[in-house]
Length: 330
Ligand code: NCD
Image (cartoon, rainbow, N blue to C red):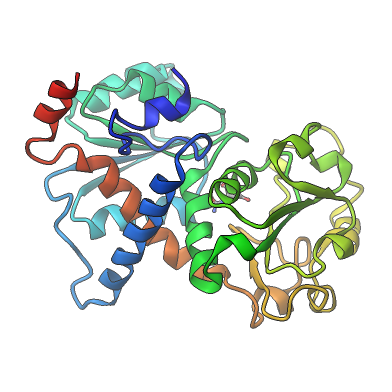
């Protein structure tokens, strides 16, 4: 069974959210539209809707995270779910418990959804394969493989600023090789029909088969960002680098850092994005990070709505009557 099959039920509705790869355009659009409908919730004086009241969601983070974990937690709380945060240091896996034991124990506590981040690619998929039928698994980042909710919050940010994807030139700059974000963004942009997707990186930070991902490859930043509508800067993922792939951070900034002057080569209305955390003076200077083109903090804001959308859609099949319909469907 491939990952897309595991993610959707027979009617094409979301069951787990593990990767963007292989998903249908309509499903991505449904997630984005649902997220739009949640944007108003945070502006209400009571920032909650009762959609997941009585459900228990576990944030299971085996790897450090600030933005992603807190926005998943806020999203769950705004849907009125009960949320449990399980920290790596306090978890039993360091005492030798296997991932499967962890899953079975949490299921025995009647949890309904797991949000999983792990340094190893495939962990969320492993959970989804072994989870009880009523449990949903959301991938919050697995190794270098995928970070689907990040990609969709980026798509929502782009759509709200730029509208139709078909006319857009989107440029992703930096450490593509180690980036689960870039991989998920490239899939999402291609599925949503972006006009052109470019990647800009030194050869040492590109996957060997980069051109097969459906992107145009550039090694020169100034050529790559020319006339861009959207520029997505990536962090140097040093924790994933084995060996010296870069001369120095200073040298990297000299060649690949986004400055106001370089930004001038892009479309005058270009937006600048970054999944965070930013290394100021390495990927971009502060003038750009805090400047008029930057939508980096909007990405964080949209992250909550997108995570609310994914959680509520994955749980939708569990509304009263849904299980009976599922059984009937075979
Ligand atoms: C990204 C991640 O963890 O993959 N960050 C995030 O989710 N906000 C990118 C990164 O760490 O550079």
